[in-house]
Image 1 (spheres, one colour):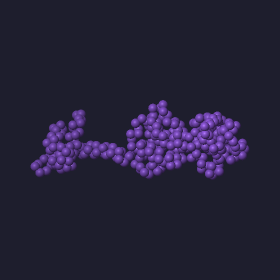
Image 2 (cartoon, rainbow, N blue to C red):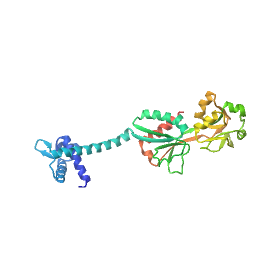
Image 3 (cartoon, rainbow, N blue to C red):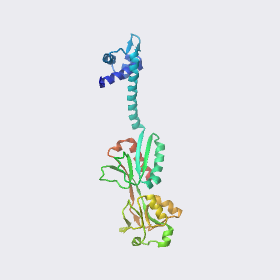
Image 4 (cartoon, rainbow, N blue to C red):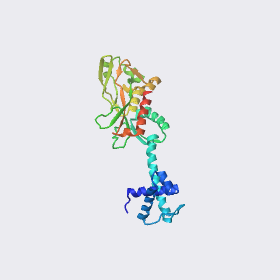
Length: 297
């Protein structure tokens, strides 16, 4: 026999009759008339061709068939309540999993520390964090949020700007001792560079209304930001490095900044996500949290 929506409703009403102890109490609890509750009970018994309840003027009791049937009706009622409660919890106290992808270096130095605090504030949100410098297909991989240095406006994805990162030109003291320090933008083309393959091969410097563009070349190139910084720190050439990465090493004396009176193009950091994903409260919370956290760095 196929299950109809009306029969499911009758099963839920039957479970409430048992739990409330009477047809009248069940009717009051459900906001129905006693006649409607009685109708559903009689309809169930007719469909099943068994008696579910022994009824008297003062009490009801389950028959053997009714006891077995009630156990299953109760399960259905509990599962329906749990499903409803799960949605309410998602609206009021976010739960579920956020799958995040992020470049390795910015992930380790900025995003992972932020996520540590976010997880403490929202312990019921599970985090699945993938650090990679590859551009992941976030729709195909089921990613909720990708941290990227460009909004990718032609991809059909949505983007939310999270922060703007300053950059600076650096090299090691050993490199400057061997090759000299560039005194102006024109000198930069005479130097070796550690080339970061995921950014432009040109470096643009500005001062006031003047702009200078330099094509960078070197014998070492990499697609990993942490490796780029390590090669620069080891004395293999100049590098354009995000300030958050360079600053501790400048303080430690392993890197030195050059041409600091010129401005370099900043890096805009975006949270990129599939269309419609921002409707999820857990993602909205994370985007807002990251924007606040990164603005304080």
